[in-house]
Image (tube, rainbow over all chains, first blue to last red; front, side):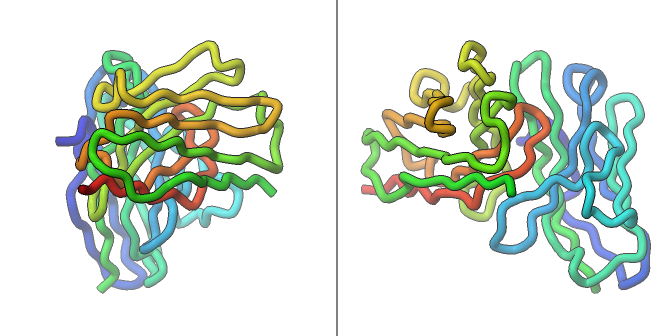
Length: 110
Length: 116
């Protein structure tokens, strides 16, 4: 049971917009930054969004992050086949004094 | 370019010990927190531990507390994870990453298999 709650799966067709939610609490998302990671099959995770809504250089602007209260979401617009991957949200948790991750969302491009 | 390379993984029996290393290059090592994260086969990510630039601040997950310890050698630009009293459920790919909460980049991972 992960501290942050994500849907286990999401899907969309090429060109569509999909969103992935991440629910937490006041001790994590509510008071700290949210990060999103993409893990392509067989590879290490890489950061997609940092500090709630910032994109590292090289990440397409099709990816965007937002946060409201104790929840966050990742939006992917103009879905492409190469977006098929696992996506994880994370945040620092003040009560646990550690980083917490969501359980991950497997995105399928139909 | 920024690079992290893990080493030291392998097969170990339950109750055994292993030390993972993560060699860093391409950035000022002493400016950054460093972290270990693991991923059991077919499962999600689990944060394990992090260490401050000086080594004076360490946090670790309850699941490994008292068994694993993180350390760093700034002269060698290397972070370590000493794993003792290993259990079958510690089997995972172990990643090191630059940063504390903002983890970027990640190494390629080291597979640790705990089995009799």
